[in-house]
Picture 1 (cartoon, helix red, strand yellow):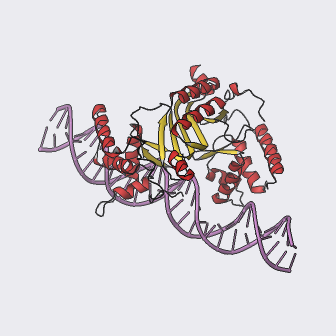
Picture 2 (cartoon, each protein chain N blue to C red):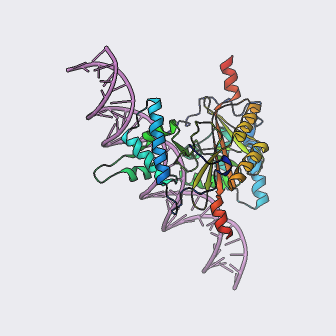
Picture 3 (cartoon, protein in one colour):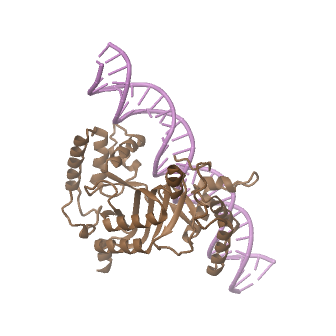
Length: 171
Length: 171
DNA sequence: GTAGCGCCTGATACACTGTAACATCGTTAC
DNA sequence: GTAACGATGTTACAGTGTATCAGGCGCTAC
């Protein structure tokens, strides 16, 4: 299918200076820990490992990629286990699923859900960035209201070229 | 060719048993015929059958569903052929792929691409409706500009309850 | 204690989604 | 004719995701 397996293409976009998640993984884990504590949820070993894998890479990872990364010689983790952990993590807003890529990325914001989330997927380097826009949210709601549609969840994914790649191409 | 105003675009629920898409399907085929003629593209038997299957149903269909439907006792159509036909049809704006469902629906508008397309997926009846909103498009572009991101394609899919189902539930 | 209960995980199997690679066939261009 | 090209057929396979059953582990109730 699509090759996001070996992470070479351009790991510079996500984790760059203008994105504020340089030390993401640690921050991410701490946030998850706190959140699970607050909600009385179990932040188990497996869930921890899956989140760490996703957060450490920063690039979108497929479930099988994750399974491979968190498997050790003596301890093989089956994809099905990864899926369950990912379900848990997405339900609690710690990772997001990128529908157009069948892949998962850590949530870099501390928003709940439904905050006008926009994913920007770079065709060149494969990075995925995330931003929010209440204005977009409002505009979508307005449009949906005209159609008599009650929205429960929205996904907005944009493909193109990220700022870093555009700058690199221009120079 | 859509004579309805965009404001009421989603007023009816696509894909209900009670309403037939024979008319839509015919219109769709005619439009496809015309479009391929204009662009000098081959509207082959297979492509015709695939489009007819998608248009006739109105509900989102998976590639394997389509393969099954257009297969006849003597003539089995492999999914891979369906995928190729679907590639052709999506490239030419005749069908859309719903990323969150891995399924395909006919394009009910006569827009090109990139017209602020919004898909509304009903959790209850499974129908998918389509509308456009230049305002959303504009707002997205504005937001992306702030991030220095150059958009090439966007997908916006909303899940919730369609007007028809809401009305039915209320009665 | 231990028996039950709920939740998480392991494991297997399987269905669905999508692509690669190569053969064939019909049409068009020369 | 034949070469080139595009569409389709065919097989094989990789990747995605779910169903199901079994075992483990902590917790509470008795």
